[in-house]
Amino acid sequence: MRGPLARSSRSDPWEEPLQWRAAGRVVLIGLAVIAVYAWSVQGTRFSLVELVRGLPDLWNLFTRMVPPDARRFSEYLGPAAQTIQIALLGTSMGALAAVPLGLIAARNVSPHQVICSATRVTLNALRAIPELVWALLFVAAVGLGAFPGVIAIFIHATGVLGKLYSESIESIDPRPVEAVRAVGADRTQLMLFSVLPQALPLMLSYVIYSFEGNVRSATVLGLIGAGGIGFEMQQAMRLFKYQEMTTILLITLAMVTLIDYVSGRVRARLV
Amino acid sequence: MLRTEDLRKRFPDGTEALCGVSLVLRAGEMACVLGSSGSGKSTLMRCVAGLIEPTHGAVWINGRPMTSAGERERRRLRGHMGFIFQQFNLVGRLSVMTNVLIGRLGRVSPAWAILHQFGRSDRACAYRALESVGLAEKARQRADTLSGGQQQRVAIARVLAQEPFLVLADEPVSSLDPRLADSVLGHLLRINREDGVTTLLNLHTVELARRYADRIIGLGQGQVVFDGPVHALDHDALELIYGPAGETGSADEDEEGARAGTAREVVAV
Ligand SMILES: Nc1ncnc2c1ncn2[C@@H]1O[C@H](COP(=O)(O)OP(=O)(O)OP(=O)(O)O)[C@@H](O)[C@H]1O
Ligand SMILES: [Mg+2]
Image 1 (cartoon, rainbow over the protein chains, first blue to last red):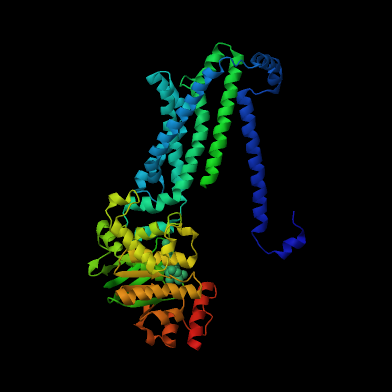
Image 2 (cartoon, chains in turn orange, brown; image 1 turned 120 degrees about the vertical axis):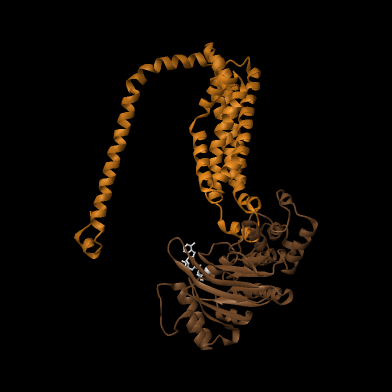
């Protein structure tokens, strides 16, 4: 609250009602947030009591998971590598396919307003559907294995990277672009000599970041039959081989950590 | 050489930047546009280069219509017109040499340029351009590692590589210190005198305009308010261009005040 002195020293007529309005807005937002959480707790039947009641079972599972059974350790390395291969192929294909789409979807270089909007909608759709759903579709269509996993990641990565590319391109400095236009360059030359040189480092760093995430996604895709280490995980779980499962989890952990570390280093050098 | 007829430009927000500019530039002229900030100098340059569309009127370059030309013809014309920007507008991540080679883009066959490859003669031409602004030893360096003055010289080399018949320079030296300004303007003057390249530039001080231009075109609120040889630029002419000297004028526009100030100082001398 402002003192009377402070109020008189400022003769801004808007000051007072604005503060009230701001306070009212804070209260409203607070109430809305509480309502949303209450709604979620109610909808999920989330209860601490249940959680506590489930603890013994959880402990029971844990004791059955240790010590890890590493007898088949080397047999899991192949599938782990396959998960990385799935992520690598899917991400790379997506990264290439996203280049033209990203260029078209970037408002500052897009050839046409309508095509631009249409591409943005398409990219959003590709992105909105999770890899898992694409993988389910393709497993149903072409059968179990790594191939549907690659396709699922490819499609999703195209959507994600297309969108991120277009944002990278929209953030470039327009002045060099105008300069290159001024020497009589055509559309392709404009892209190659002013747009891409500026946007490429950021685009590449997004590709690597997305590869990082796709290694995790590829692991999950295995759970529904799309190859890789996830598939082994699912098999072990189905056969109640919990100690083997621990080995698989540890391999996955090591793999994901390593990839994140390496790609983080590469990205730091790019930007 | 260059002719504009009744050029008008109204921006979507309603600003009337040009209100009927008709000009004729003869081959080999070095003409300088003077005008206070917001008078439409940049807009005029960019209309001439076909970088923006005038709302009305036409531009002819060497007798060819620019405004009504198709995109192909425009690109061809732009290829022969050099444009120098206040902020240099180099592609910072590319090498100095590639930036100069960009000046050749209007000439090379598109297929080659896709791989950032240029022919021997293009490279030679770019190298000569770079040599003539004294930056040949920087060819392999990234453009954004150069100082402002060096970057503007690279921009001039880029224009030279175009082998242009017309150079447009929009405040080429207003972000450079006076010594560098002289070096950059010296290069432009040399191109004009030695190669006979018609030049239309705008400068931020009357003093520089007097030193480098043959002809002064005064712009005020989107109209030509003065047009004459540099020696005709007297006190009255400056008042015409920058407004009455005694008046503080539009104090809300600092920049304009500063420029009019420059004009006044010169008049006082
Ligand atoms: N893209 C644009 N959209 C709207 N108005 C614009 C645009 N570009 C310029 N203007 C307006 O047009 C007028 C002329 O601008 P212009 O840049 O040509 O002036 P100038 O003489 O070059 O000024 P300065 O000396 O400051 O560079 C100004 O009022 C400016 O605000
Ligand atoms: Mg300007």
